[in-house]
Image (cartoon, rainbow, N blue to C red; front, side, top):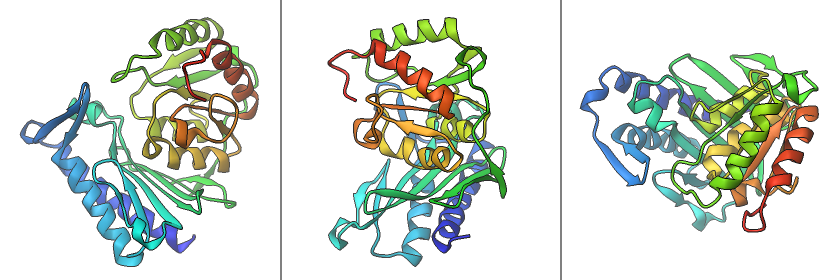
Length: 268
């Protein structure tokens, strides 16, 4: 295993320990509202601090992009950048809904090279390094083998903060509800993408994501034999925030439907 991936795993597990302890006493957490339907807790901040501290111990000059504290370390050039979501699925966490994760990715010159998505509640550790495959608790994973959209289980994320494109989203949802085996919205994009990588979901689409929601999961899918793109079928999803992913056959069919409903105002 690559030493950098080992550091990411160490950081994710440290954060996971904090999250698990806090989950035992949710009623005493300090919660703040960042914007409509977007919460942050003391656990988010503590988990992020633990991750950054773990990374800085070994890589003090690497740049970091984290959900709560933003960008840092750019003064050293930013050739290496860590992309961190300390608790993806905070709303789920606050409700005791067991679908949340720690997401950590590292990019070298803009190319994703290492990824960890850790579900602390289930102790499921999804990992990947570029060119070395994707794993769940050290067991190799691959995307699903289904080739027909009608037999596929598709994940998504409902709009919950910005509703500019809700009509487009609902049109896609309506068509896919008729043409798939089912749609799911668990509420933690990084974990949804890890599920695509492991074949639990056959595809996924969402608009308006942040880089820390997608980075680790996207590499997991690529290393598990799947495809990830923006709405134009290109690779700018980290910049646009709009993503389509899936096993190769399902991805093509899913992207076609998403593109058919995309409006000119919706960025690729």
